[in-house]
Image (cartoon, rainbow over all chains, first blue to last red; front, side):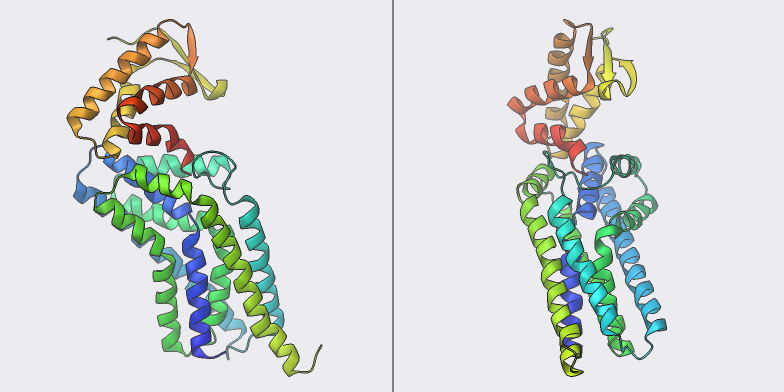
Length: 240
Length: 95
């Protein structure tokens, strides 16, 4: 895999990560509670900023941890086709799961989350009034979405270990930035005074499209990597 | 208007019933209005008005569910501030 291929895979995986909506839901709720309690605009910016930093730190830690673990198994970056095949299977399975049950079949943007966990996150969001708490909320929202983001993170990490060390750092930073794009856009909209009702209405109106894009993206990426890494390796070694 | 002596059945009976508290309803409607950038004065006026309407509706019943209260408040709020009503109705359906 050359550097460009690796960066394309990392970028697409991060875009798929960005299409998942748990972090955006928590950020919307955080904005709603903060504005609803008549807190200052500076406070709103501090809380959303801390939340974003929390999600960025946890995403970076997860990608780095998975990459480091993979590097221990594959120090030269020579990943076996079996690992690629397992990862592609995981991506395709996750894509089907996203299509099947990412959003609950009811009004609003309720997600697949167990209701107990959703209530807990909602309560924590409501109770958040310090920057440190918002930072922790950002960390935990990434963990709460781990079931779905594990696919893109694993694939991005496999692509990262193919890169020279300096490019690996760039890759981790790039993945983190792209995966945060949806949050950055929503935080920008909230910070610039857009109405939360309009943001939430847009999310609700387009939720099935986002679900289709997220699930479809996982499947297409899984198939692409399968062909590029597994089929190509089998063809090269003459295994049919 | 003081709090009426009406039992509010919470979450279809899965949580203990509570007495109707006007201040809680007021705070939630007020917050929904502020969340859509309504001015404080308007938010206060709308919250007062919705509380009056809902309290009058409750006064004719021995007990109501919290979902009924929310539905009634949202329905009346929709006439004055549709965006706040949307947030009020859906805030439990965001996550």
